[in-house]
Length: 277
Image (cartoon, rainbow, N blue to C red; front, side, top):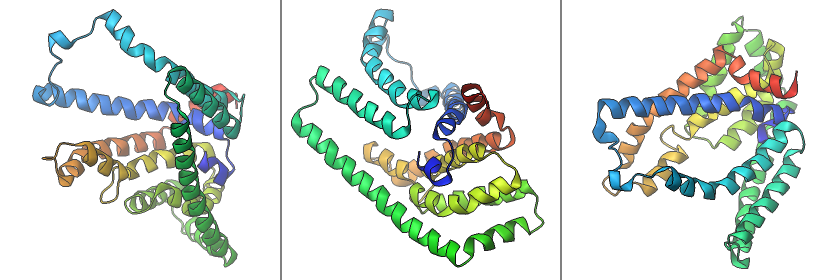
């Protein structure tokens, strides 16, 4: 959503374009875990027979997630299909979540107030980040920085794929130290026009950008997911252990990024199907 707002790209097409890359990354993770557990079964021991579920028990476990699935469709599905804009879909999602909470008896007034306060805090953080980045970019473009970067890359004589690689490497490096919102606000206004001049599809690059930013959650030293995992890991698991265990998944994300780069239809197939363009 934020990328689409900054780059003036179709948010619905960006969502649609993210479908197959999401399945691709999930498939790579599943394949890696399966192979590792096959080689070393101790990493993923089977569930004891007395704890295994039959079909009826499986349905009983899965049934509570049905409302969540409906809620996801109300938000993402309405955007992709074109029924609602992101703001409208967010409103529908909030209403749906409130109704589900009321039905389940998990929406007391105190929880509603806490959710509203947390939302205001998160929104304020994003808005201030966007405000600061917008001021910086506006001044940078005003003094000719945007034209300088564009002319430097386009006039360098480098091939268009080399320029794409330079952009991806810059994003990976920034992802080690900067929050993704800041990276987006700083780089997209500069990279977007260059992408269009090179003849690349802006939807393709937008999803490629998002796949790249997924790597930022696992890149030391400031990958946020690493700290989340450390907070729930057993005490004997050190931060270095978490970093080391994340490296294979970081490599898989890089493979997914390369596949999405050189096989654009992984990204563009769904937008073409949904939007007939």
